[in-house]
Image (tube, rainbow, N blue to C red; front, top):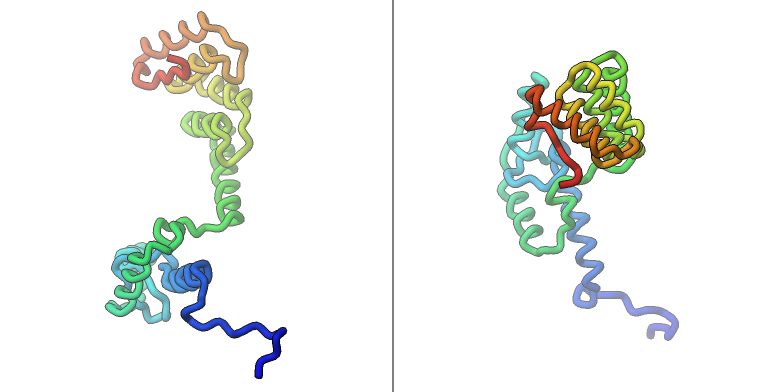
Length: 204
């Protein structure tokens, strides 16, 4: 006889919806391709024991010069189809957004350092790219003043995009004191220099 204080074991029929969804997502996590970081649509099993998206593995073999052997697996394909048909699988397993925050931060830091180094070395395209990073707060903290300074440096190298972006900033008062007249004249200068297609007014 079961003591009153003991809970009754849960059978399969009593499993909560949350529990079942969690199990399905754990299964999905085990079937994710480690190259695409999402569930494969054409899964294969390689001789390293891992599951891959076929086209990703073929491309990886071609790029690296390796020759990882693989074979198709229709059973895994059916399991993945059933998981997707359930409608319970998290988007991260479907769209491939499994890179964790620490990896993303490391990548951003590397990209920022590389772009800034090139910009400081005089590469005009990198100056523009760095300015855009500061302007939009990507890979670094948002800093409109610094963004404007890098756009200005690029403009001083007769960069059409740099001139246009300086005009934008002056016209809209972004990172610099607003000056409609100077902004307008700078944008006209950019258009006359052949950068008309690169004139991006923030305020229209």
